[in-house]
Image (cartoon, helix red, strand yellow):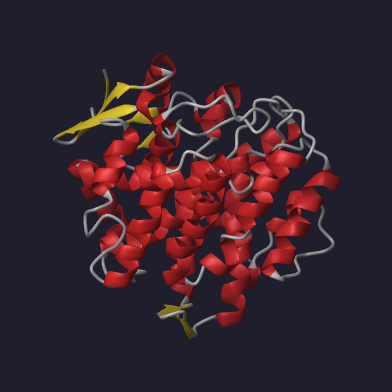
Length: 374
């Protein structure tokens, strides 16, 4: 089956989008609009639906109203701002499709699902949604639907004026003021409780090398990229949500049919875990810098960080309906990507860049024979 046919089949399952704590209306509403999205042939229509769906998916945790509108800023800058990277592709629809691919893999690959659920059990004392699957769904919603939010920053090299403009628009939509003394991306680093967002990421990964990567890329840009969009996305997510927690710390808020707790444990465990997956997902794009910092290690390790592994794999597989911002006619069709599943294994039957995919997986993934390129 091609990728969209697989998704159309599996979204009918009661447990595809939700755990047992969700209501019947939520399940039916999301199934209905995602069906429309998957069948949509018009790019403008897909973009509109992607924002609506992103907002609805994030609503149970009261994050939709804060985060989903930020996608419009990403889309606007990718389409209408001047930047040098002519190969840049649009990311708003891509993020939603990545979310769907991840749920497809979680449902169909039992070994991967068990490792993810174990990671959820090992990394929090308080589940965001009542059980390990609910915890995964919360983290997956955040990391998949926001993993390219900072792409508007990476497009502008070290042009602080354009970066500041991007951040200014984001601040307008969140109605927050950030540190006005810092310039550019440095505005995103200070958090409440005297925390630093790079320090939070290093703490989650138990590894300071992500901070080294951030600093070295800034000093030695790659193809005029000073700030990796994965790290920029993670910093935005942490900054925006930290400000909500600062105001509502410890409170439970009734929001559109949901009781939402702002206990800091959710920020420190669930949100920080999501941000770490986002921050790591694109580091392989810089092969020389990666090798200098991580050596020959395989950073997408299904046993060490299953959520990071899932985000990267879903991101790679999501190639359909992902056109260049400057040329929407150049796009892969769903029929060009075909997967099937065997016990504990994902088989890539058809893929437009199969050799490139195989090389990336061989070089950067420890997948324990979970991925087979046909």
